Image (cartoon, rainbow, N blue to C red):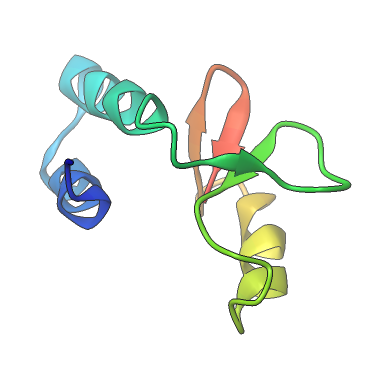
Length: 74
């Protein structure tokens, strides 16, 4: 299994098409699930994570999340 943290870390050195391909790779890892009560927001963390609500708020801020096909991933 691919390590999600390692794949996310690779994004920092990427741009353009390479960045887009990496985001698609991460999105297709099938570790994200829909956030209840949200539209097009998906997460890989649990609601029991202490910072969960802050992460949802941050997902709605333009530069703080990863978008793929109109969906927000965090």
